[in-house]
Amino acid sequence: MPDFVLADILKWLNGRAKGAARARGILEMLKEFGKSNPRDSNRADALNARLKRYQSFPFALSDLRGSGRIWIDERPLKRNRTPRSYKETFVVRKFVDFAKAGMLGGFRRCEHCTAWFFAKTGIRQRFCCKLCRETFRKSPDGREERRAYMRSLRETLKSIESRK
Ligand SMILES: [Zn+2]
Image (cartoon, rainbow, N blue to C red; front, side):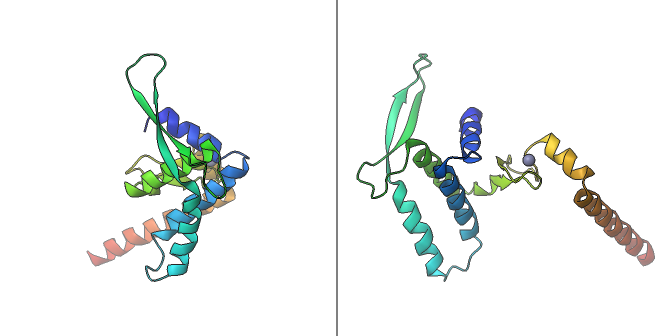
């Protein structure tokens, strides 16, 4: 997915639209689903009942600038019982695509401002941006975390020393 599409999804997802709140709920459910007991069928039913609202059909658009690329949108089916907007349908369908690709873990909430962001695979990223990371580091929580980390580091070093 191009970066600008992902950026657009995140901007909408973190916004105030009613649909965005629903989409955030589904994203959380999808992420939690992988961790839940596989025999917990209530959880599967609850998630699937929600996903059912996002039946869509692929809708091809050509790039008007003439790049030759095509763009496949996801449009909601009109016969959906509770129709969702184009945007909400598109975003939820994208979450499903990410889930299929095993990449849902990339969607995370910033530990400072709680906004959703996408961490590039393989990177242990906890904050949405540099500013949030720096602000957290200087906060009492951040300082305490650092102290705890340094303590455990010293203890590890000490135990290695004593084994020599
Ligand atoms: Zn943040």
